[in-house]
Image 1 (cartoon, helix red, strand yellow):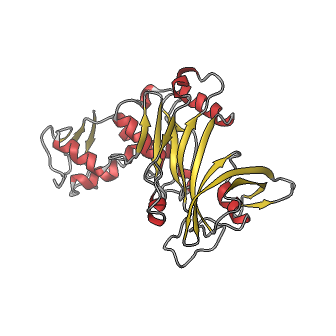
Image 2: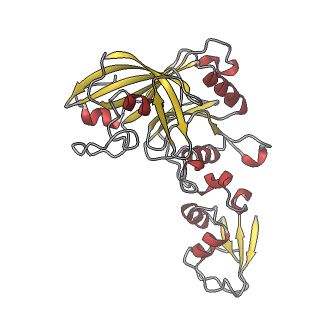
Image 3: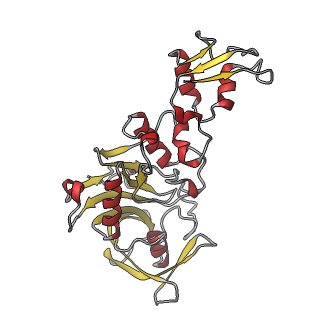
Length: 322
């Protein structure tokens, strides 16, 4: 419990507005709940959110100590009152989340404070009391893979340090099969094949370039693909990443003359279609462990799939992903 004594400069403010300034990590909806539950009191008694505070009033707050910390990126999860997650699978070790396009996975993607996928995941686990930050010396729930802001799909979150270690190693050793759905312009030929080349990243321009021949600083890249269906000058394609380079699928298909629908960075926006971001989704994940995975061995051979990929149903309503 912490107490605040109201001084002359804070007198006259509504309680809810004072809380927003004095305890910025406490979401407004949660503050209202705590007021209703008498976990926030004034002078030892019940108080209302619109109560005007007076000089000398003493506020008692029976809330977790974390909320009194100064706002930082690593405690942004506290500002998420109601986590919004599309959970594909969850157990005591991992969490698979279907990230919708438009949401950044990490704050360094330029997302606003408290609005990233990891903020919502950490808030979810904190509110479930599966993760208690003040009882941990160093571990925080973390993402094992990442997806671009405007790309959707399955993201793996580790709930324990051991799960994080194992997952990171399995991803590094390519013991996972990740499949993407994409809509490309035209119809690739052959309808099943492999795109190979060399990819160079220009960090200043935040884009990559694909060449057919090796160049200094370029890394090899390979994407296997299969055309699932075609209509109206577009094709729904399943992609398998053999290498996992930045913007690999987008850049390789553009280089092959089949840019992704809605991808203004590597192609041109087609005015015939109402889409201004890439039609790309990491929709299927299979754990193909070829070596020991310790406490995660039970996942070996299991496949998880997102059934609702918006653009697939919008542009190819007669095709089923099931």
